[in-house]
Image (cartoon, rainbow, N blue to C red; front, side, top):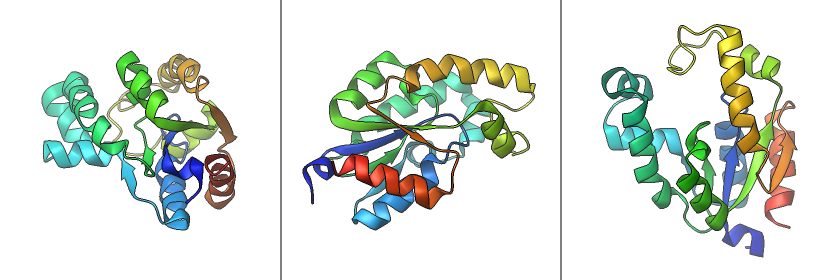
Length: 169
């Protein structure tokens, strides 16, 4: 295991950027543990993200997200962060201290093409493309603070190759 792989790898980006798929590929290729923060929240809550939003709202979701984040940031693990997890300043400090951060950058048009018609995305449900684009722009400023940026608008295998190189550097 290289020096880079002893640190956690945290993938961040907007919904549809490929964090889960790329993270799973990197974890598989490196023999590392993989955690999807949204899945950890679902496990802790005993319900889907959509159901959690419906019953407790975004604040309940964010509270659970903050609670499970430290356990996900295990040395050597690959973590796909929820799109909004990095917006909390305390979360961002913890992530930045414990992990190599990689922003999977895609355009809003690419993100909207991937997520615009998907069910189960409570933050975009019932919102117009322009409303979701405003959320995209607000979050992008934080994403750009990541240590590394990778073009996420390519096949997942190619993105994973680039992420692996950065992580093991």
